[in-house]
Amino acid sequence: MRQRLSSEPDRYRGRRRVPTPPRSRYAVVGAAAFVGAGVVALGSASSFPDAKAVSPNVLRDLESSKIADDIAARNNDAGRADRSDRGTNATTKLSEAQIEARAWLLPLDDYLFTSPYALRMGKLHPGIDLAAAEGTPYKAVHAGKVTHAGYDGGYGYAVTVQHDDGTEAIYAHSRRLLVKQGDTVKAGQVLGEVGNTGASYGTHLHLEIHVNGHPTDPVPLLREHGVDIKLKMEMVYGDLAAS
Image 1 (tube, rainbow, N blue to C red):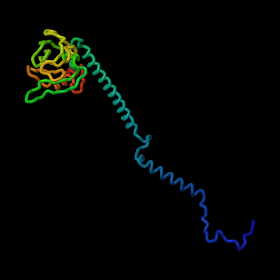
Image 2 (image 1 turned 120 degrees about the horizontal axis):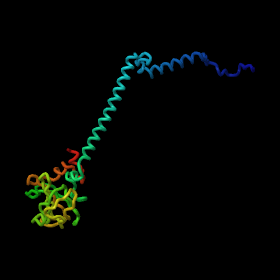
Image 3 (image 1 turned 120 degrees about the vertical axis):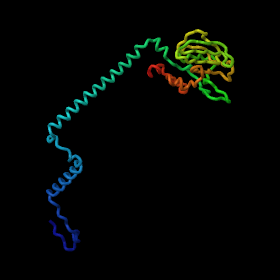
Image 4 (image 1 turned 30 degrees about the vertical axis):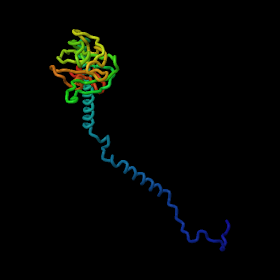
């Protein structure tokens, strides 16, 4: 080993050497930190009892409660299935003729709603106007008997269908009629073709519905039967679902 000359600068002069702590101290500090972190992480769980310390009675009660819940769930599922079956059976008990008799449908497959049931220039417009191309077939909204089919002044060529509940539907301004007085028609059956006859200012179907001999707004009445004129939607079994 070379002896350091007195003239060489002492690189360690004025410096203080920090003694290395023993390895056992690191072990103690690390263990303490680990334990501290574990206490923080598990602190919220420290209040839970150990499973071995739980009373057997408590475990038995919990198991009984779970079994009761399972039985209740099965009963509910069975009840829902039973109700569903009853609903299906109730529907299937109706004959095809009965279903057809109670169905309500849209009068046209496609149209533009152009005029509501409302006052127009001081006079009541007693129906709604649905614009469609000339010659477009229009259909009965509900089953009934044709009580009028022919030319009717301002209505032009028109068809009146009386329903079993006493209400009447009038289809006006037709170009051509395809039914005659006395015919029995089903919902969805073609009655005539859209036209522009009578006091009409454009090709369209004028639809009126009378209740007790007086015109009423067809929009809410049809909606009650599952037909939405504004949204062009129909639910054939609307009356069946409501009953």
